[in-house]
Image 1 (cartoon, rainbow, N blue to C red):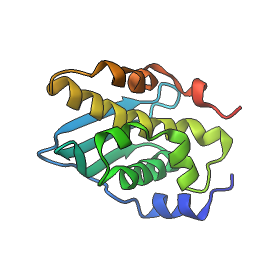
Image 2 (tube, rainbow, N blue to C red; image 1 turned 90 degrees about the horizontal axis):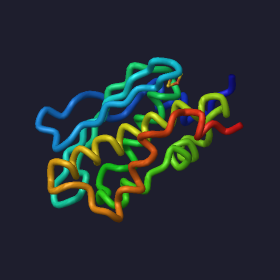
Image 3 (cartoon, helix red, strand yellow; image 1 turned 120 degrees about the horizontal axis):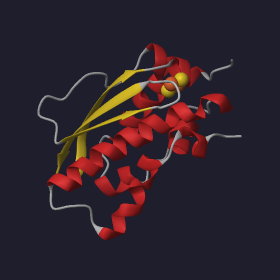
Image 4 (tube, rainbow, N blue to C red; image 1 turned 30 degrees about the horizontal axis):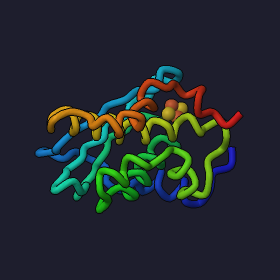
Length: 146
Ligand code: FES
């Protein structure tokens, strides 16, 4: 299987690995197909993600996409982070092999799971934001590139 240089770089040298002890919210998701698990920690101040870290027990593509996803959301507002899609993360990595696209969904879902927890602990999910969390009910098949 051919991986881009960026995928290899983020797999070999993942950014933002670890935990945030006083995280504002965390999100844990699993891939039913392969059993891989990802946990994302977010530190949110004034609706801006000031820090993000992750732990991924999964394949190289899952690690590379978590690394890139955290890089992409640090410094962004919650609204901008909600717009992050697995496709955008994969594109930022110069693409993933089609058979590995489902791995990138874990990163999107983990970020959204953490944001969902953040909303739930801070007054609930606004009505106009609920659509962003539908991805949490999707399995990997919906995002397969086939
Ligand atoms: Fe499980 Fe990639 S094979 S996330």
